[in-house]
Amino acid sequence: MTQLLGLLPIDKTPGWTSHDVIAYTRGILSCYEFSRIGHSGTLDPMASGLLLVLIGREATKRQPEFLGLDKVYQAQITLGILTDSWDMQGFILKEEPCPKITLKQVKEALKTMTGKIKHPIHFYSAQKVKGQAMYDHARKGVNIKKESVVEIYKYSKIYLKDNIISFEVFCSSGTYIRSLAYMLGEKLGTFGTLSALRRTQIGSYK
View (cartoon, helix red, strand yellow):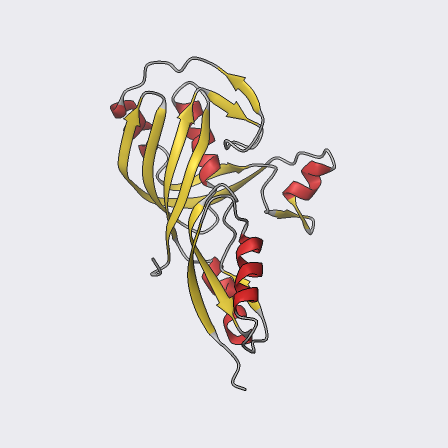
């Protein structure tokens, strides 16, 4: 039997992990022969959007290539709330009335977060330190402070309503949108927590 080989673009729904998508896809394709199955880069359970499922040995061998592609996200940030995960899935650590902020202030803050920037990596991320994911260290009570250099190409569709900011961001691989939410909150003199996220593009795949 000819082995199945290819790339399958999936629109992941919130609540599913990337591993759930792989397991479900493996079940659907169980009537076919294929050597391996993987994906192009994790999406958090709270996020929706594009996940590239790689089917077959030749496809999964190209995983590093897909991991390195630029990304496009649609993000929503809630101001005035700080959680331990920098998104709304975490425990609320602090909550305060949001100061009066204008759309112009938001756009000016985002300008300072454009180009090559250093952004903090949350200690519950999958980024590896000493061979272990940072969330593994965090679960052992070791919170490692780490930053990375990423490139933010542009923001578009920037909106502000009450204490909710939304925008579309075009960025390099390795960008953590929850980190941008945290940074934006700081720049606006309050807290910023990622409250919704959708990935709409990976490289040229939409």
